[in-house]
Length: 222
Length: 243
Image (tube, rainbow over all chains, first blue to last red; front, side, top):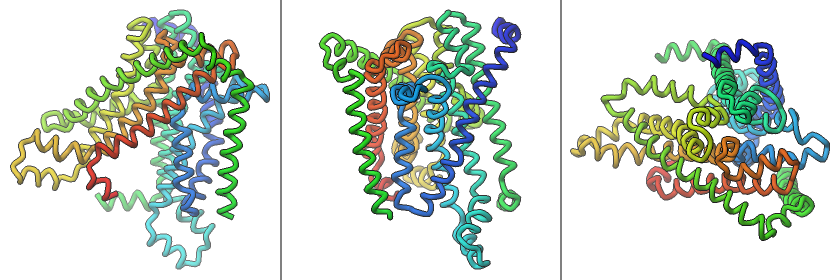
């Protein structure tokens, strides 16, 4: 109850920190999505790079987040950006690559070859096939990848408060430092709530983005 | 064109290694590592880190697999859906929040850190055990029944070996997350390599920072590699060949 009181008492600050958190994750996703989707499409067209790119993204994902911040700090310190929002956004972009690339790759690989043949038979060229057939069919799976990336990024952005990026992690950091349980709890609850809400929102988006044809097909299969 | 790209890729890796070497020398990392007073401290922190990870992973694997197996038994199967949902929600909670919550209930030190790591690692293991066993083809289980196997034998000789690949993926994910989260355990007073990273960040001491960040990264990469090796040992040969 005292946690709720804390949130009500500091409502303006809570709103500001939430907005900061959403801003970091949002900017990172906005930059990461085109990079990931384009890389994913390239490796479906040039198979020989597929395992290399996916392995590279997998290694990036394996690096622990606080270690990645630590490794980037001396490098970015050269241009005076070792601390703050810039390294946080860069790290989130790197972490988002694996789910986005992997999902784009598998989704486009799983487009039925009969449909591609049909498109080709209608005289579509490579670009048109990609734009009008492969991408629309792959969109739900790509958004599922974005959803994984978004939820993961919200958690990592909470850690980024230790390199001065701000966001809701500030409450956890300050709460631990001051041994102030209400502050820790409100930080932890708000970050989790944000993750759950974004997860649910992306699930709805996934349903909306599914082409009508696939929905009908699923209904018939049932 | 492609050959050129591959050559470029190799050259860039060589350049990165070279730059890394120069940076280590410049930042004084090599000096720090060869310091007879600093080296034992780093080793001790490393052992602390390893201790936390090993202990929590052992608990998490036992509890996670048991929970996953129990949820696929006939008596508990109807709770599987709701449990999956709760686990899914649990995984959206950030690792730092789990650590902080453990601290606010259990105080500071290694104990709450191991507790938080265990809880956080159970989730992927339990979920993958559940998913793996559910995905075992029913005809295999029928065949086992037809051969007169009792349920425990079906579990040990049919279901678990067939689900092993998925279970191992869960174990791998849990292990990697665990190593990363153990680096954060410093903030609740549990030590580990995070000690060096956080101190390095707040003092802007690059050598200390790298002395923590590089071993953690290598540990995570090594754990990833180790899980792959574990797959060769634990997954039966027939299943590996069918891939």
